[in-house]
Length: 152
Image (cartoon, rainbow, N blue to C red; front, side, top):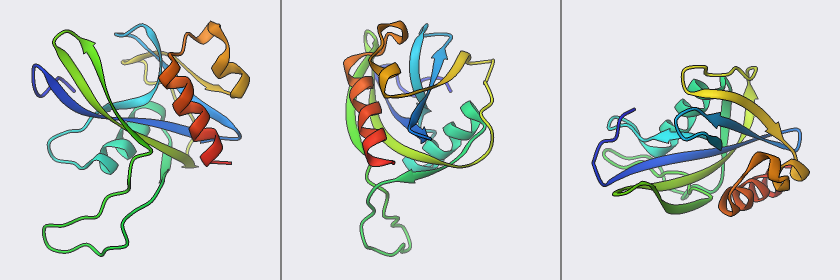
């Protein structure tokens, strides 16, 4: 999806865990390993965006993990699952993303590479996450380790 605003957009990152490994993709445009994720579209909430992005980018149906306020839906009100973390990161000056970081487990499906957006897709274990071969940033390593701790 194209940027909605020239300076800032809201995005989701989903650290999907299966068998003590986290799913990463090699992003064609950014030329680096990243978790599944993307922009929140105007007609969806962050949870919907995370589930959609997981399906589009990996072929997997996922269940988001976290806490939800103990409130019922009402007309004009939907209690959302708390993301694991929030951050803001620069994509390219002057554009920034406010990122909602979610953790998820696989419900069903088989991993399928989205060749339009990615060069590769891999499950990385705890040792892989630390390996310089993958070139993961400190924040991505932290989020991946957190996902592995929360989903065992």
